[in-house]
Length: 241
Image (tube, rainbow, N blue to C red; front, side, top):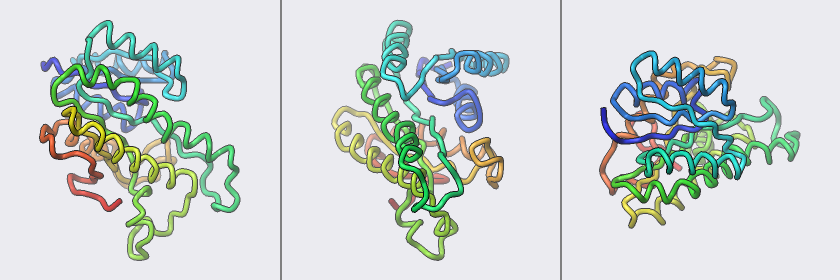
């Protein structure tokens, strides 16, 4: 068992849950973030039954007050945070043409997929700075890669979803901004593409398993090279922005 702590947002199911399971299996102490307290407790109990050191943390990433309370608890119980994984996200209305997607839906997507990772990262920075070799991982998507989306030969070229795709592109820009600022503090910031994974998110239509998706995030979480920051990775390879 390591004394390294990991907070994963939106971790009561799917990729977040599996990421918690894999990191917990390597001895990391897990803060399992969940907007719904009961679901978070149930997920944590399931992982604890496997021998994982896990604590449920009620955390609504879209609420300033909820994030403040979460920071206060982690500070009170641990005094630091080694790894922050911003995993929580929503898809919005799909499928829908960009010209027909309601602005209120796009705003809701950005609130969770863009503004929430900024909010959570900013709030936990003091605890990340209280440890050595801390890292932040933004769970992005290949659908946020402008390089891939603009390439007619790429599998994602035809997936033209305005709200979701652009939110992940924006999250990639957020990743670069934090990476540049925090490089001098010894905190690495990278983005991970879990790939098209079978989850509730897409009606289980994805061709990748949650185990495969989480593995890439776990790989990033266990890197220690300080110069490996400001990157976007899929299957341990860099993805074009």
